[in-house]
Amino acid sequence: MVIMTRSPHSSRTKTIQSLGYLDELEKIYDDPIAHFSALAKEMDVERKKENAAYSFSINKQERLPVFVSTREHIEAHFLTCFIALMLSRILEMKTEHRYSIRRLLDAMVQLNCTYLKENLYLFSYHDEVLELIGEKTGIEFNHRILSLKEIKKILGDTKK
Image 1: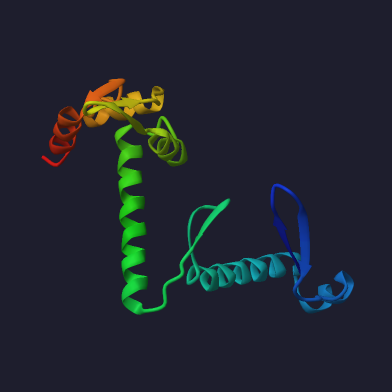
Image 2: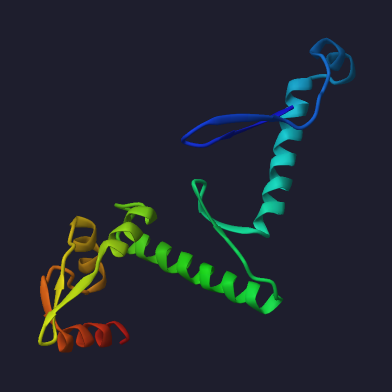
């Protein structure tokens, strides 16, 4: 039985158990391929359960390591990740699944502002994803320059 792991840069295989020759296995099992396919799925589930203690996965390409040791820290970290996931899913539903969670999060990460002068801030990123988020949440992301007072008002309005 072989597990295949792939990364964008290379492909590697790892033999985890030698099963024998097919003609010998047909004497033991009615359908050896179906039997070992089910066994491979079980092993995959077990491997995922073991790895779940060490990482929280948003998608298969990105794993976030969890470097916490006490039960309270693990629970707090899990709660933070769970809330972030729920907020992401709510945003995805509010935008009617037009964009993936990854695309929504990437757009929000790109959103930033730079202090210009006299309490004026320049928002230097805007795209159609932020436009849709703004329409669905009532937050206007299309203003290029805002005063600190306007930013505080927007933040205050989101808490209501």
